[in-house]
Image 1 (cartoon, rainbow, N blue to C red):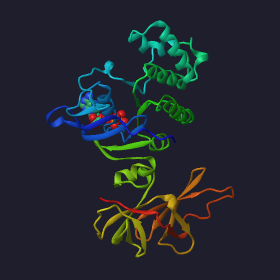
Image 2: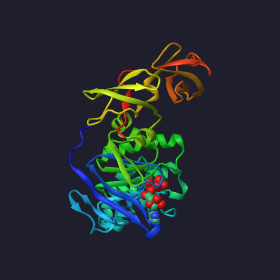
Image 3: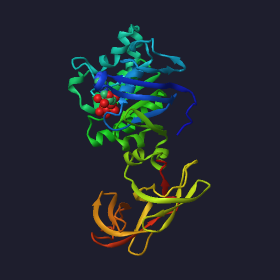
Image 4: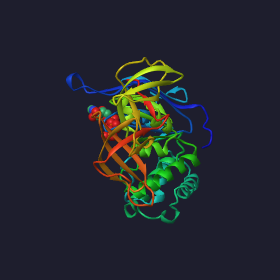
Length: 364
Ligand code: ATP
């Protein structure tokens, strides 16, 4: 990945957005602060209703914050109406004009800006090439596929060369295979244009595969901002660990902390080493997380023991759910090989080996 310049394109500073009044009041955003770097693929990730679209709409200028400010390259953009902001949006619905051709749709924003005809023509040709739609330039957008419409919507939004492109769940209408293709395409477009992308999704896998950094949101707040690796491997709290992929939560007593490591005594009585955040205080009932792929199932003894409850085959791997003797549930993910079967059956008595560096203590 090329080095990204360390300049902020967007700074959201203590932004709140309250809808309604009295009893029906909703804090769609609650004192949110985040900085998005220039040339970054930045994703807002969270469940439905957490405030992702609201934040995009405030950046676009379709709505105003109740409190706080939004800076674009250090300048407060509150006084600027949407069309004067160097920001463009790609909507989930694409919002193309069905009776117009692909080329006319792409040139529409430039026409509105009153650009000279020759400039529009050249820019439309450039955009058609960028999204690989030259062959369909003269086709009406009502006569092209969903994936092609998506490309046209992207080209139209990129044509005026915005500094920031906002993408509100742009791939959600596409089927799985096309969606995967467009994820790669979007990454390529961001890379080639160097435009800052702020991408909204509730799909954690999409966020992990596409983003330079991710902000995980819940109930109007940003819980954690970090690289996909940070978010997946070092979740700051329970919600993040749970929302990003499958995770095992174990209760443990934490003691003997040194150099970012602690001794975690599990309910089984076994002790494991776990990573711990700075400033964490030892306590008897902390939560330790272990990703399913960082544990190994054995027919012998492990740090945990139990019985296989269920086996789910996923093609590339198999998830084996174990009912632990402690009463807790634990999932182990095992990579599949070409030889048949995962080696275990429902009801088998098993041990679970937790690798060194696999466990992390949550701060809450
Ligand atoms: P989704 O993934 O479903 O689009 P989201 O994370 O984008 O969800 P928002 O659309 O930003 O969430 O909504 C955040 C909260 O604010 C929700 O509780 C929503 O009902 C509320 N909300 C959003 N817009 C309005 C509005 N115009 N009036 C009242 N409440 C609103």
